Image (cartoon, rainbow, N blue to C red; front, side, top):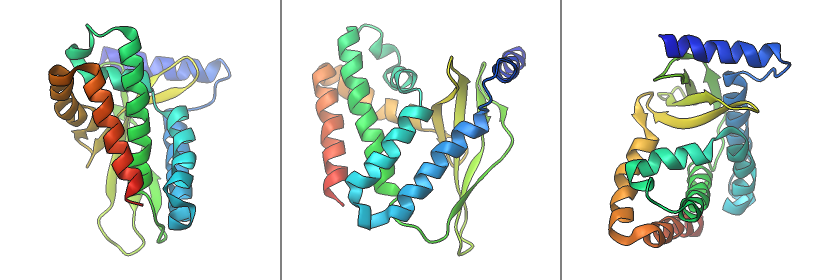
Length: 199
């Protein structure tokens, strides 16, 4: 509870200092970019959608922190330049994944709920993609932490509970331990290339 109170205090502090963006604003900006990419659809091609979503990822996501979470303890002994290379490849893979999955529009929209307490000083902003045909909504909850410029995403919870950073850590750390930083970068780049080729 103390950490949550601290997070709320930081939120209020950003508002009182003239920084008006709330955690929900960050999530809305990212979700709006996904809808824009969906509307652009196949006509834009995956490179067009990557351009739209990439800018939104750079603004909303704390990619260095997300990379740290993915690498876990295995990343602590890596040279900074290796961490930077992995972060760059992870960013490209993340953007391509969104561009692949959000490639068409049929009247969907996002609903965003009030934030709830996350772990430590984090706040979780619940978000749901609502289909126009009455299908079950897709839950994408965003774990947020206060940054100097605005609130940033540090994890995404699929179905409201499954940590994407934990899932990626389980997938990528064994590659890092076996093949080193070069092997992980190559694996991420291959995944990105495969996503781009499929469109």
